[in-house]
Length: 320
Image (cartoon, rainbow, N blue to C red):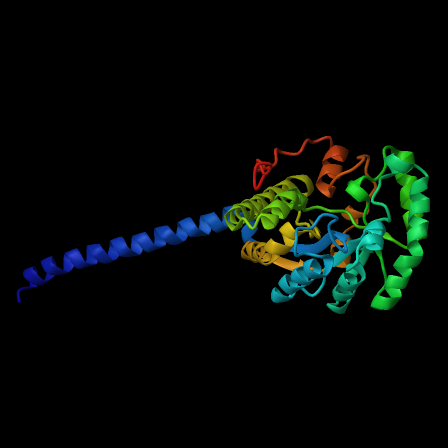
């Protein structure tokens, strides 16, 4: 074979190799840029909390609080979530036939309790009766503390309403401190409760197709809300934040809990305790805002409106 022929046959191979290498490098650079631009690719620490234990007031046929809590626990255990906090409403427990057993399951699973008031009413509704409400509930909470062999440390205001003015907020804060509670504010909230009624209807009607549609919208919005929350957090705080996730003990969340945790894990979530999250002084600072999530309180304090949230799906016509 002549040297001229050998070099001419080698040239196309070299060009092909160069094109392949260039293509691979281009793909790697594109992927690297995408990862760098996506804030969800970094680890995000999340404390998981549930309001309204032992369970929602309205449940579909075939469900009680015991089954509801059992499904939530199964999903948490499947993802090796070692700590979650459930905030108990006294009036729900008082009328729920399976409520005590549901709370026993929660405690036996190693998860914490918090106080969500007795009547789930705000200070704006009942004024100084708020403290009577708390005092009447305290003996039961302390009995629960003893039975569960844990110290009840956390309180969450109904509707996240902290008081209408500075005087009310300081009065409420002082009362909680005297009772030994730490306020458990929230930074990550996609309002999972909005899916509950539609889920109840679908399950009552045995409408699996509509339930699948609901599940898709639930998970899509949860992912979009996480992206929005992280981007908004970066803008407000200019540093990472350990987030407190607000969920509710309802059927919509019980049916989607496993998929929700999977979705969060794929976005880099690491699950931590509520105590670890609240160790950040940003959660315990005083704010001028009346109610809402930590992000809403801080944006009010800074005089900076929050960016628009992701558009919410319409659920009213699902399983009418």
